[in-house]
Length: 191
DNA sequence: TAGGCCATCTGGTCCT
DNA sequence: AGGACCAGATGGCCTA
Image 1 (cartoon, rainbow, N blue to C red):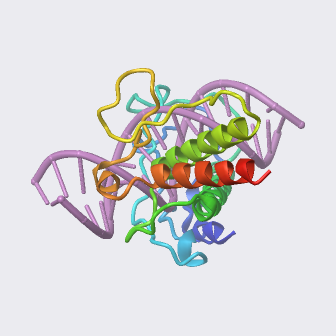
Image 2: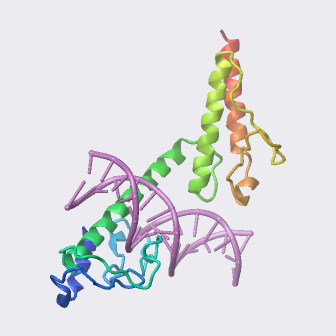
């Protein structure tokens, strides 16, 4: 809980102040959240955490809350703990993305796949595998793949969601689609 | 410099 | 009640 170290600079005057009519800064920050918790992960740190002016509820200049009987210090502590949990949650989500990247067949690129590319390739990979299964069963293929970007409606665009850079790469999906189908044919023929 | 991607903070809502 | 989840906002980094 390294974020909690930041509470050291908490203003003593705020201690045990009930929250009623307490003004919350427009930017929602409490100056304690100099987001430092990435020391553990070694990842980049932010000088200023995002802003808090999110959502519709906080769009005003100030927010007045009803009495909740928790001190400002306690509230700040909970916020920091919540931030920490959210950070950990996002890290685990990113870990999952990383694992997904590792199992998706794709041409090695200089840069790693973005999240949207990862999801798109994963989707296409699943569709390709589905087609292989259908093929092996002698059923009609579920999905039709197109090879170029001039696809007309109704067909699945393999590069859907891919950015310009990735379009310059060989079409990964086409490759593994062909490989999968070739293997599928071989396995069928060898019977 | 603009745009894409990302990490983080934050408050609201849902769930246990 | 508290944690998980979600989406909006913001700012940093990188690339074309």
